[in-house]
Image 1 (cartoon, rainbow over the protein chains, first blue to last red):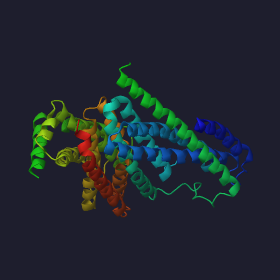
Image 2: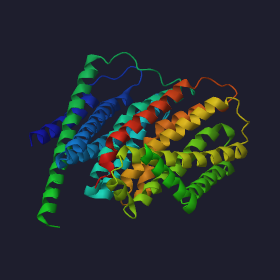
Image 3: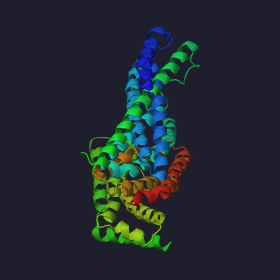
Image 4: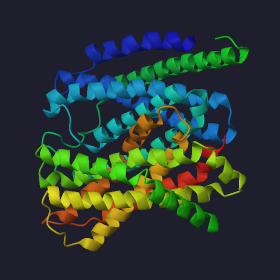
Length: 215
Length: 216
């Protein structure tokens, strides 16, 4: 409940700070403000999948259903944030890089990760309780795959030179931007925790109901 | 070690008699290559098309390789015979490797013809890419096939999981193949390292979790 209040307050404040308080970026102008949604979403998504990975390992070792529910709930919420990343990225990319999409290592990794967890969620949806072990293995493999995907994408890119508009990161953010970015990250992570708690609780209730024999 | 050979031999004999996997995978691969060729893609796209074709065709076969162990509870038999689960995985993977490699040889032939590719000069490196690329796909596909053997909708699920999970291997194999076939050339050591790392990592994971995957 405290988390819910925190998230409900912090999210709109974060958006207002990003839109009204944060200074305009010198090169990119106004479109850069999507950074305050994009980057916190990335951080939250990767955090969520890390939780899924750890919970999946714990489930395979201990076989306790609560770890399985945590893994499933965290993957669901992580996928929502990763979808947000993949939607906000092109909206930001078009005005700034001049292209909706580029096969940069980070973009490729995020997209393939999205497909892996789409498969994971379908596996869970279609195979129910019996699929818990298979889902745990997929989560573990998928998580271990991330550095390899990144590696292969970096290697392929050396064949095709990067678009010239798409340069390496500039200097570190000035403090006025960094503070707002960090605020938004915290707000997104709290929101993730709210969703996570709700989904874990729902799944726990569902399994209680299953045990009690109610439909 | 003998259990390994027994299972491997059994799988190959079953495939030799029933011919469940190889013909349908090979025809699907040929069809995909013919379609991409017919729609006008040029030779420089051939390595990527080849490896995606092998991954797609492979995924349709690998899902069935374990199904034949579950439709009459044969896996229980293997487990009751006290066969080490690691041996079951390695033997099934070896059998799948031979079948997918055969499909891939056919696909290479078709790609050479359809996309008019010159006979490659760097054959030894190409052979290593072939072996490691196939090994990566099969290491992952055999584990997924075993996990999904009893799952509902497995035919839809396996490609959806195998393709993104093996994406780094497909990307590295396609990149290395492209460079080995091109005039300009260039080193492929990075790609080979990635393929080797991919195969070793996921064979190790498979050996660690296989027991959990096939028990009831």
